[in-house]
Length: 386
Image 1 (cartoon, rainbow, N blue to C red):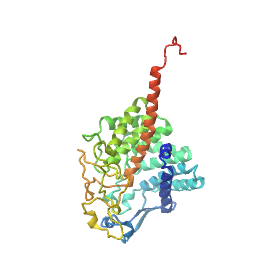
Image 2 (cartoon, rainbow, N blue to C red):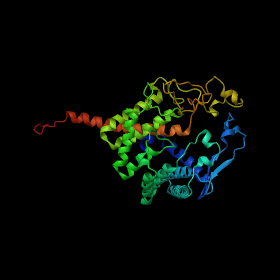
Image 3 (tube, one colour):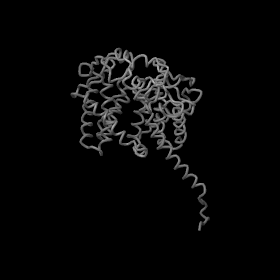
């Protein structure tokens, strides 16, 4: 967890720990043997034909797994990285649980490495609906770095650096950070653990491009692509906040850029994109459970098509966002136009960026205060202060 002091300051640290453990417990249950991991429950085609309360869903929901004959290196490595990072978090909170997480992480990393393949070729509907991962190299590197951080075993770092150049990531142009392209996150982690300027330089270049050159909406939002545009902007803000420690001369520029992106998300454009935050926030997010009225009223496709606001408020959910001209429609039916979809992964980088911004903005304020004091200090050795 980056910046735990911030989560503690807002009294959310325990909640975050509980949420992480809920997720890691689930991953452990899905990892039923060293080379066997369940990765999808349900069928996309069937699930998207249902609208209503999840607890009232009576469809058949098959479970799909990756194994030695149907590998998914991207998924196994990603879960390994999650468990490795969580093992670091739990090391001082629950040592025995931390070790359990690490054991699973090591097995999954080995599974991902030995049995190569992509999960999209195993899980039905993944390619059609969402999980577009066409390359597992960055997940393998990501997993190896997190295992190095969790174990301090240099073998994992050596593998990460070897694969980085083997998969030609040093020449890859990266313009965003997301589950299907972790290149810039890899460079950030390698810069942190190796202190090699080849990695920090590439992260600084990424941030300079994002701030100075990348396409933006008229009101200043970094616009990568229409699906999850706000999440991608928040992810970039997070990367650049963390990169600000690599170069003091860029610190203020990067922090102010992050401020602009987060302010946009929170409503500086006149529209808040966080459900329940501000006066003008999304009332009709694409979220079936929140569209349902209180029991015993029924819930179905009539609620999907209703022009009324969702009766239940999904507080804190980040919607996908506006078009490249800042135009936004608060309409539940706009799933394929991608204005109002909400997703767990949208909020992941967003809340990380918020915590990082508070941390680095406070640091910048301290620096500015120190500079102000230095301006009034007597710098002439002949001056005596009594």
